[in-house]
Amino acid sequence: MVLLVQDDFDSRTNGSIDGQNGWAINTGTTWTVGAGGSGKIVVSGTATYPTNYVAQGDQSWVNQRVKVDFLAGTTKPVIWLRKQDKSGTGDGYMLRRESSTWYIEKYISQGSGLVTLASAATPVTLTGGSWYTIDVSVIDNSDGNPVLTAYVYAQGGSRPATSFLTYTDTGENFTEGYVALGANGFATSFDNAAIY
Image (cartoon, rainbow, N blue to C red; front, side):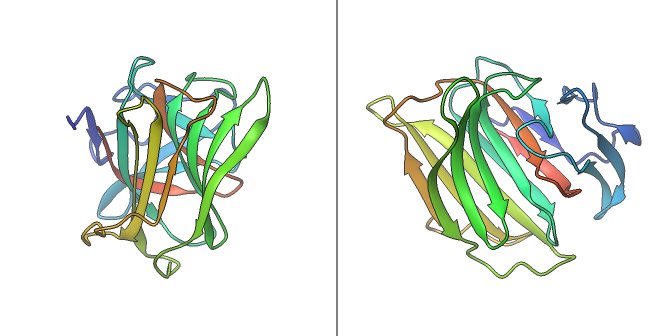
């Protein structure tokens, strides 16, 4: 896949990330660039999903991969794929952490709401104050159905040979959209975002 956006946030201006390097925060939420990690990071506010996110990209993006580091602790990171809008609730797929479980879900605001497609326990022990990498993708298979695949591993480590969570959506699915970093109720720190 072609690298479309790469951002370690080090060259971003401290303060709101909105409008910097194509990032767009949802109205009423706070996403701030500041010191952290080995340079600068972006930190979410404490609003809940599906409205607490900062979006990137183009509505026409189809096959997508997001690789980003997050700081473990009480954080609840959310990664959106094929998000239908850069503002509002914006339907789409998401990888979401809740306690020691990760979920692949889809959000349909004008219908069934939040639908859990697959879930699994965290594949590595998350130590508070340490950084980990989320690597999640959605790629259409030969039948045109979206296949969502997720990995979580220690920052700087190698991606495991096998994903810990995968799902093929053969139902009502999303065909294209934006990507977004999100959080659910706790300030969550992200660094080293790469979008393919």
